[in-house]
Length: 379
Image 1: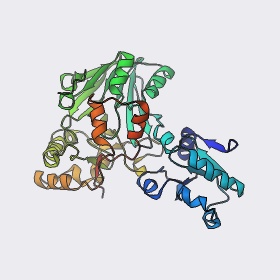
Image 2: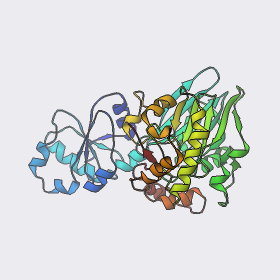
Image 3: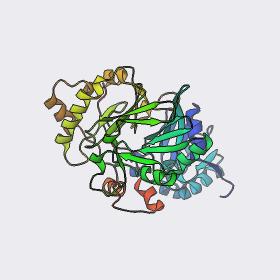
Image 4: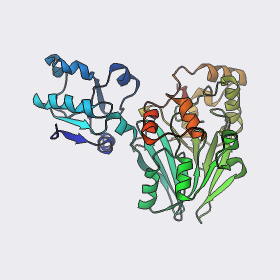
């Protein structure tokens, strides 16, 4: 088994982004494989549970391609090694995804969204969770927005670039993944920002975003304007960078809006979301580039692997961006959420509120599974 080929999550992602076809043999149980899987435009996903291979039924193998490398995936990597061994015995080209779906869940990939003489804007994509975080860099200084639990990703990025992290912010209190914002601020000596509407009553040490309408990053007068955009959560905040880039958190996605039901006040928060669209988002120009904190579908990803869309394009795709009236919007937004809530979201919220501490192993377990923070309305 030690001679089996291994492929890392980074290598698989690079293969997918290069446009080369990938064949994934998912040997987890059928429910897990259906609920959460590796996705890509040129990717073939073949779910066959591990236990089916114990019978060594040759019909299972005949359904697999002989002319392409088959990447075998399981939860942590062990079952995949057994199945890959069976494939190689029969002359198939096989490789094992190192760390399985848990390893895939931890992958973060940085990509430059925009760069000019005054600043660089970097999007850090976490493809397994559909999570997106950002580094705004200017004159050797940086602000990190919506950092994930794996703070080492940002520390390594800062060292390689190099830049000093002076500001860290969360657009809202996340429910589908553990925020690394407070931890990253503590490790770097940066100021940690979140709105009082999210953090009051938590005991968290933070700077209220509503008290900082302008946050400057570096000496180049890069301005980040904090815009209250409640609706997904009461204190959700978006950032408008240089009047051109909207870091929208979970308020506006490429193909949807933030779901207003996670706090158990769907109609009330849907009403807040309506006010956000009418009073804040709709005053911005069509040319503003929307950069959300999540994406829910591979089709939202651009050819270069980044997730972004012009606000004008989003308005054309999403009828809810220009609601006819308040009541119909509330009915639609509050009643349209049909997906399950994020797995373990109560425990994750408690962690992000500072009320619960978990070790890294438990943190990784809590984050397994897809993102479910959006209400989608494309046409």
